[in-house]
Image (cartoon, rainbow, N blue to C red; front, side, top):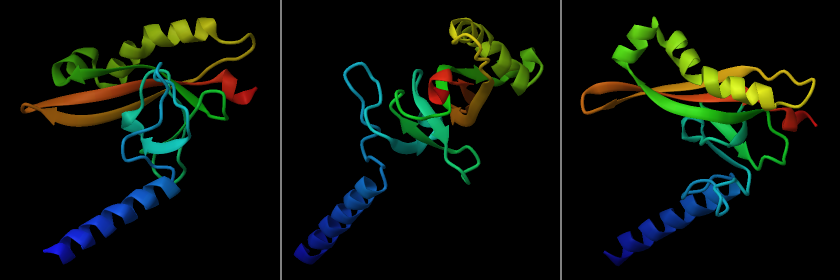
Length: 150
């Protein structure tokens, strides 16, 4: 039994050290008291929060994001997020229309506040899950960020 406990502890130590070497945190990204990211880390794109600055990780089909402090080089910023039910998607005429409509107001506000001469582009991160037998589509409204290019 002691042998199994040692093996389990050794495995846990190996996982923890591998996570720290690969910039992954077992507890999530490092954030300050205001929720701003303080260290670069790689996370699932669906785990991003409003205000997060990031770039997609190449070769992951947009599934992974390199989350960075906003003062560092990045490509996108999360400007909004939410959830849609199947009836809401159907009522909007499809997923693209529903997500676009849901992100429209926040993207318009972001564009109006953008630096002179910068024209942000809008993107979406979408995932589907099931809750209590109902399909839920989660979305993130993201925009290219002028801060990243200056």
